[in-house]
Image (cartoon, rainbow, N blue to C red; front, side):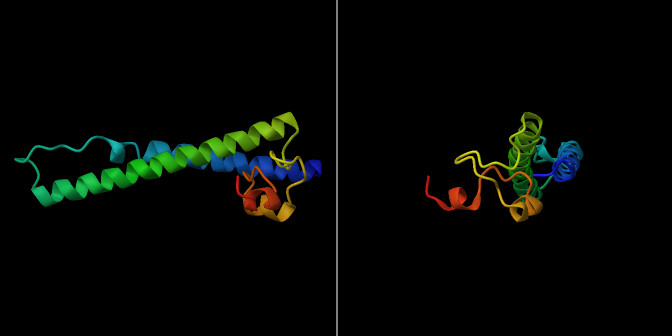
Length: 114
């Protein structure tokens, strides 16, 4: 893979990392525990708040996983292994990396069952 392509992927990964970090900070309040005081909020409003909190917690969990994938790809760039399948060592197609630079495996290994 050309140095120019690696630099482009690194810049994209750094942008993804910054966006994920920003979203984590921006949604911090929506993941706080829900107030269960019946005198302040009605039962349906509390149920809605609990559902919203659960969705935000799951979104935060998924965002954390995506951040780990981004950090792993950045580490592969730093170590010189970016663009190589972690399973078989073959080159990952550029089209796959253009779609998602966090891809850790080639298509063949991604398709094979475990």
